[in-house]
Image (cartoon, rainbow, N blue to C red; front, side, top):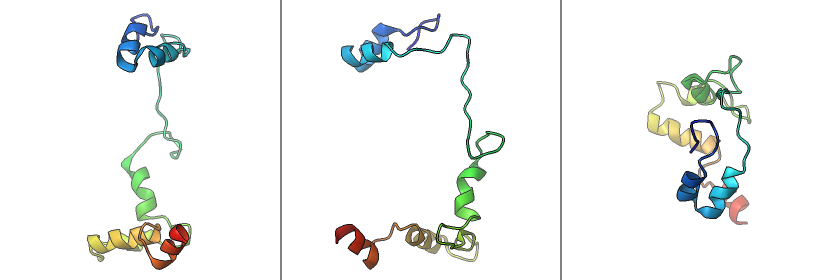
Length: 104
């Protein structure tokens, strides 16, 4: 979507997004061509993304209600049961109290 010099390829933008949206995208200021992007994971102190950061809330940390999710994902609990308990703790199961909140 950009030319070799780093500017927008307006014709390609128009072809991909239509004339109006292509023109609007083409008006967005670009970073200088010699700059490079850097992806940073805010939750990590070193800025690197790892699968551990995704699994951390599921495995070791407590839910906001103080329920330890580490026990939910124990090897002693069948996976199907772990999923059901996790869904209930996270408020994803249509229990009576949830239905009353959602549907009055």
